[in-house]
Image 1 (cartoon, helix red, strand yellow):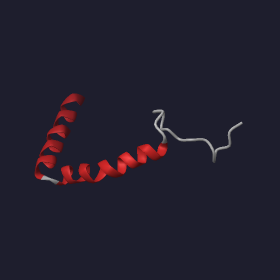
Image 2 (cartoon, one colour; image 1 turned 60 degrees about the vertical axis):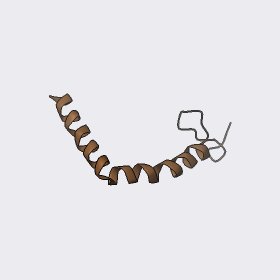
Image 3 (cartoon, one colour; image 1 turned 90 degrees about the vertical axis):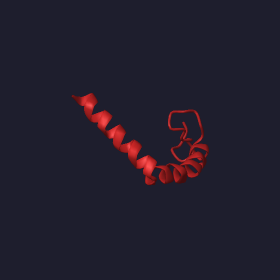
Image 4 (cartoon, rainbow, N blue to C red; image 1 turned 135 degrees about the vertical axis):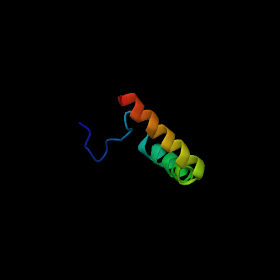
Length: 56
């Protein structure tokens, strides 16, 4: 039986937790910059409108 402390997390992907976290540390700042930009804000608003239209 594997203890909880020794059990690896892979988020259901088969990718080790430390690899997922390393990727997230690289991507998150770039994603944040995009959504703070004018282009990102515009695209997000367009996406929200599309989502509202899907519900109708």
